[in-house]
Length: 79
Length: 394
Image 1 (tube, chains in turn brown, orange):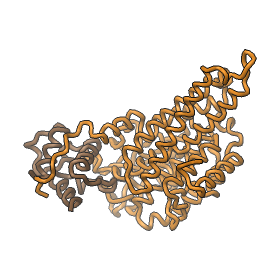
Image 2 (cartoon, each protein chain N blue to C red):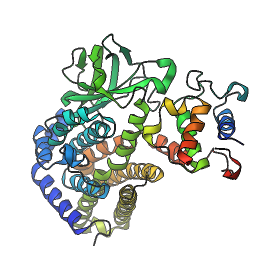
Image 3 (cartoon, rainbow over the protein chains, first blue to last red):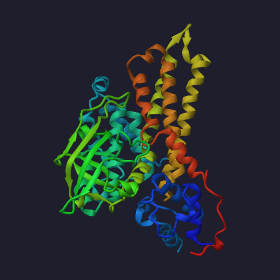
Image 4 (cartoon, rainbow over the protein chains, first blue to last red):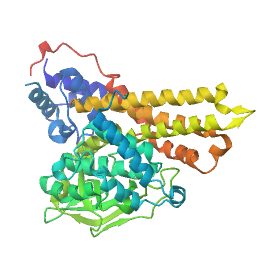
């Protein structure tokens, strides 16, 4: 199990996206999968799932553009 | 004995209460009818350092911690019956000055914060639009990159508290609507920027002494140095401002609850019907006991949040619950205050104005419905069970 696969599964289930279309580098923002409410859902999921704190200042596209950037953000926080 | 406050904070509470009684209540009825902002009151608050309460001292603020700030605002709400002035002060501090503290460059901080703290500048937060309320980032206001690397802002903002009196606006606009929240940035815009105009003051149910209007931007050019945070950080700026505003804005409401309660107790003791004080009747007494109980629970929630913030916690759930509870309590207790005063409470005056002023608290800084949605998510409702993390490849 990877962070990428878990995040992908969560987004597919909660944000009504097709898991096959959520490649690691596909933009979740440009595709319309992730809006501001969805972003908060993902942030809360990350906080609960990985016991990290997602600060307000971290809520920007650099961290949430793709499944891969989300996973990178999470692993950076865990370390 | 107040278990939440130190002796120093209690002294501050008493000082601000006396100050507010003395300086902030003049001519309130007339100003409420006219929707007139109290420049006198603002200047007096500024002399006491209230517009910069939570701003770090190095930028001219008081640098107060959360509990001290709450105590000061509670005292202000207790002593000052001009709820509109207090609302303007909160909007200025939490949605105007603090975003600059948290996201501004050193140059922006040095340029704006001293004036925002000494009250010579008034700040305003311009996010909402006709079609972007609770869905706050569904903006139509646009920011277009200019050849010199700056931005040109175009669009209309509604429900802009302080706009008629503000010197500086925190304006949210999108450079790329297709990127939704990620396209939204926040800009610090001076009132005298060419292309920015302030609309006519709008009438409101309550908080009438806190002026509000639309602002319009037409080819309004701002340099890139006026950006708050990196491009696309609008959501982060908004979230941080709202979290602070929700945590603190109803501290003054708790003071107002105490003021209303004491007025009701006094009235129930003095007002006589059937040959005895109306407080002798259980129907009246129980209503007042309910007001006292809600004051206590509101105060507990408020200072619990303050303690958590001062201990370094984000207190997201506690802030949401406190905002929800205190705002609902303000309306319930304001209705009770009208009822205790009977016909006199229905006439133009403190109880009537208090009720009108209270209603807004269930709407501003996120409606009560939005607070419940946030709380539900923070409780994990709708989220999957947390899995054992041992098998995750980081």
